[in-house]
Image (cartoon, rainbow, N blue to C red; front, side, top):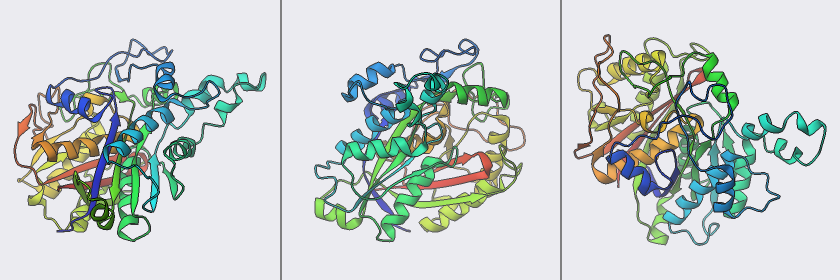
Length: 398
């Protein structure tokens, strides 16, 4: 087995909690964060449900102590809150003592501001600063600067696998000796653009989503941010660090099937899981729990469950999707679920797949519907994005 790369800190903010501890409590108490939209003016306000963080932008600005002149998007503010918690959790007091990098993932970027101020910027100048915050890299730059990171900073945007690829990139850079420590994860806020876009694709549910249920009606969008601190063995030893878990396996694959759909047989997902197991030096029977991508769309759940069947055959471990708690948080999803995977390992707990009743007929996969206490050594987490971008991470017990 590949020992992997050490995780020494975590931070998260989502619709089920503003900290790691609050998220864990909600998972254990089976308390979802799916509700109607409150912070965005949209025609779909009462027609769909989302995983919305109820703090307003003004409240987030006050929490971070930002000046009135700031040009932070909601994505950037969520990212900074989660990243600061991760750094604090890792006990880091001198951020650049080790060769440190920052790799963040996003899809939405600053479009919550550009969709609000795009037209007015032609008539007056005071809001043009928000237009400059549109790019995916803006939030990464702002958070890295706030943390004091002077080294490598990068942004990844590969749709819903983005944060998985940021974690994978960080782990590979540590393994290659390019960095000693890297803060990895992702953030995305809700926006009218994404709500309208997914509504146009006809994959939004008007009710609470039901991952892997044969009667699933679509996904709930969500917003969130999560980051993990990855450190080399040398950094861990020098700092006498507490290791929460290890990133032991990682892989990215693509079935090149369709712009927004996965192949029926889950070829991309199958390849990603196979490669991640190979990197980790593990066999399918070594996996104790699968934190599935499980978006509750007709295509994704059928494709992913077919891939799980191909890899694990009749020996499928415990499976669940946690998106019925948080909604699908797009580029942040894999980072959110990385935190949940580590919490599962630390607490010997499989978190439930809410709202499930009837299995998909073709694959007959039955996700866990209650909190399960069992020994966990290895958790596999899937994240699959548009364009066939499929990524799998494996987390192992420290």
